[in-house]
Image 1 (cartoon, rainbow, N blue to C red):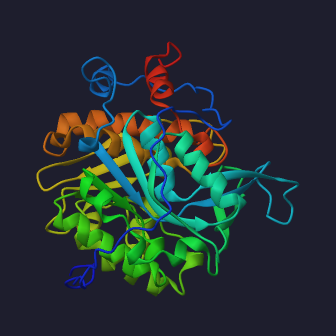
Image 2: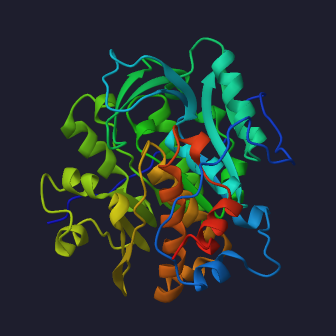
Image 3: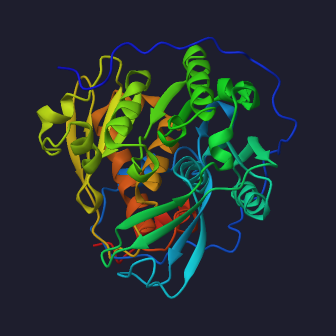
Length: 387
């Protein structure tokens, strides 16, 4: 029996003028004071990964033809300065920009790709700080909006001793929840090669309707659709509503990335390492289903082939941005060459590169601050310490 809900119908989409607040794309890549984490030691990757990551003269082209547009939330994560303590016990917190779709947009730009972000923040100091960070990282912010009557979302993140985390959110409502369909830059979406989003923007109106309208615009324009549910149960009214909401748009996506925990959640407790269980989540229009296993690597499923790519074991400090770094690594390569979806050897090489992106990210604190640059990823692959 199919696990996703029945036929999904889009309502009509009104293509209204975009909000008057817009920002052009920055020409210079900076990191707003954040640096990539130091290189760890891990197993050497196949040299072909480097060849795939360095097409032509070794530089990525950041043109609209390879544009990835990311839709959803942008917020501030407050991360404890020490691991293994509760929020009440934490002596201090580090302020870090975050929000899964924004993390992916920055991750793609740092890897040399072309990305844009669509979402809303408060017209406050945090909102302006976040927009500056995106622009400084070469993310196109033409689709970003500011709400003078709402605050930017905040999240406090508890880090366990192993780097895993729990969240406490302050966003009822926050500006990202209030994005309206009339504020969406549909022209930007139609220019994209890939349109990427999560599930948090499906929780409440008006953002839910805006999200659905954005998906329809992308689908009608022939844009490849990428979906990472990025489950955050505390934000949903109940576990059942989260499952229903996540699966409500399941069939609209060409590419879906889920974690092993999310497979178990969506299948109501079934074994996430059983291929037959995962295949229940594979819908007829799927081009690629990815299941990440943290340090264990990832599995991939297409209509024609499936397999597993080993991960890279590192000392985890904070796993907050790992999945988003993996997605950024994958989408940056797919935007450059969609034929990866039909060639298993090329796809495996691409996923090895993505695994390095995720591994490097967990060695730093916060999401966006820890996302690696393309140079750092390639140095890690080429490093003599990688035996």
